[in-house]
Amino acid sequence: MKIVAYYRVSTNGQGKSGLGLEAQTEYVRVAAESNGWNIIGEFTDTASGSIAPTDRDQCKAALDACAKHGATLVVAKLDRLSRDVEDIAGLMKRVPFKVATMPTADSFQLHIYAALAQQEREFIAQRTTAALASLKSKANAGDKEAQAKVARRDAGRAVAHAKGTTAATAAAQAVADTNAEALRQAIQSGMFEGVTTLLGMANYLNAKGITTARGSEFAPMTVKRTVERLGLTFP
Image 1 (tube, one colour):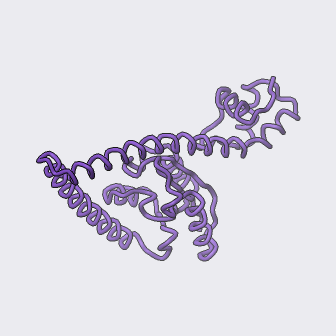
Image 2: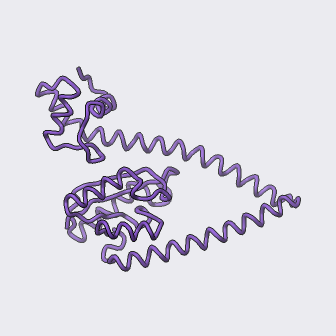
């Protein structure tokens, strides 16, 4: 079975949660080897799970690749695709997909799992909201301990937001560096063969059937950004 692997890391970093990029790729690799799947493409988004899959650039590219090659979409865990049961149901109508940690689960089982997981998250959110409202009410009434807890919570959120923004930028740059490095040999081959313009290099790569990380054809500006990221000297 041909598969397209899709990975997602959130903007607040997920290495500590076990859902970092390295862990996800390992889940998919093991599942592919165990089930005889052939990985024909890999796509990675750095985005919050609250963003719909069809609004993420690399997820859309992965879906297009599945449709183009008659492949199955595979994710490490279901929430890497979406935490919303409606999103899952909609994607099931577009492409077949598998979850590496539940490789034998069919569409019906995955749908039920998604629905139960969403229900549990909603219950947790309701309990958290109620507890926070009670805490704030006590703080407003002058409870010193409650006021201290609210202050610590606000300070922690401010620090987490600052770290998340930095991590998101670093992750995006790392992905761009990786995508550029994958093109180094092809670009250097074009230069060796006498390609001297950005348009010429774009045409060269397109003629070779090489696509951008998003699966589209190269344009001169795309080549320019890639060459600059690689630190290559190009006429």
